[in-house]
Length: 244
Image (cartoon, rainbow, N blue to C red; front, side, top):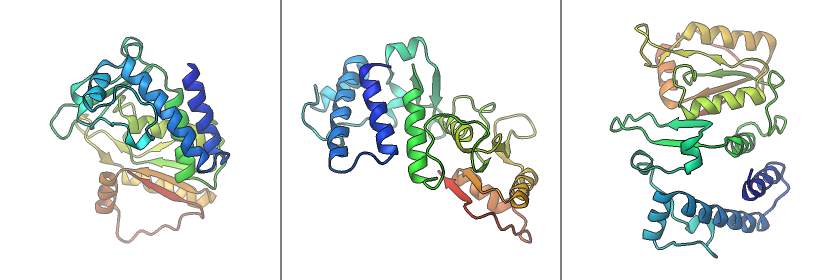
C-alpha cells in the first residue's frame, strides 16, 4: 500500500471500531478525500480532464461533498482507473449493460481497500450485532448466508458477486448457498431454484442458525412469484435480508 492507502485504511478501521467521532471524523475524512482526489486527477487522465473542466484543478480546502463526482455513464466511455490497474488488474468489475448494451468498467490494481471498505460498511449497516471483522474468517461466522445473487462462476466481473464472496468469507458459518443459476439452455439468465432455497432455509430453521439473505430487488420479485403460497417458515432470531 502507498502512504495514502495506509492512511485511508487506518481511518476506515478506526471508523468501523467506533473510534472516530464527529466533527473530527468528518474533518479527517475531508483531508483524505482531497488527497485521494488530487492523486486521481494526476494519475487518471480522463478524470483529471473532467475535474479541470468542472473548475477543480486541485482540491485544497473543499469538503468531500463539494468535489466533482463522475456520472455512472462515464464508466462506459472513459478509462477511469490508473495505468497500473490497466496493466496488472487484480479485479475487473463491469455493470450489467442493460441500459444500452455497453457495460461500465472499472479495474483495480489492489482490492485491499475495496474489501476493507466493504466489510466496514456492511458491518455498520447490516450486521452491527455480529463480530466486527475486517479480515476474512472462513466458516467461522454466525450466519447461514444464502445468496439470490448469481454465482461469480456465472458472472465473474460482477462487483455484487464479489461482495457476496467477501461477506461469505467473513460472516458465514460455512459456504455461501447460491440459489440463482443459469437458464436450462446454459445462458446467463437468472433463474431461481426455489427447492434449493427452501432446503437451505429449512436447515437454518432446524439448526437455529440466523439467516443472512443477500438479494436484489429483481430476485425478490422472482421469489415472490415462485414461492408456494401455502409454505411458511419462521426463521431464527437475528435473521436479516439485504436488498440492493
